[in-house]
Image 1 (cartoon, one colour):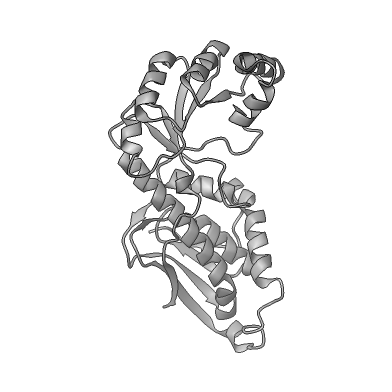
Image 2 (spheres, one colour):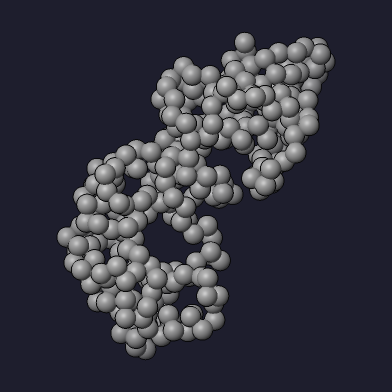
Length: 296
């Protein structure tokens, strides 16, 4: 069992510092006008209680560190004790954490902490389903930039908790020449758009920055290879077409498949030998996990 985190004496980790602005915005949304139910009842401040965070369905837990930060920011005197770690799989009925302190503070932290736990555990659990669907292959599962505005950092963490790997975090993380880039650049000479763009970018970016090219056709795959792309995104291709593309690539670039891939079809894509499958289905519109807070 994890030791209790005494949040009034906690030195914030780098991770928590990164999450602090997100949590602050969420608390401002919920507590910006105070709590007109709890604040007029001073006896709730004096009443000391312990409450249990309990999952009501099987899931991969994610968001415990964020829930701890919520409690700290509401009231540094609250003591949050995680019973599991982010990334642990657990069954319905399991107590995943407890919080102890003033009842008024617990009530104020409750919904925001639960919102994070429910959503992030949903992302982690859905990611696990995709990871399990490709088990036994070398293919890794990653997310896209189709995330909830303001929550990408947390959702990326949840994907990792579910067994996935991180994709580029933002537009500054990695060069990605997408179809709209190439269409605009290729108005005069479409057959040279990839070659010219990659050459120009290589001369201007850091040697540590990778270049990914989105390819919709086998011709574009060939052009991306010849241009020296580090990663080739095989977009909206069938497994059969991807096998053909991989015969062109021959390990000269990382091959990523994306577009229209579901839980039902992902195994066929992984069995092509593609390195990465990226999908928005593990972050966008994922069902929340049912988590409740019960007084002990």
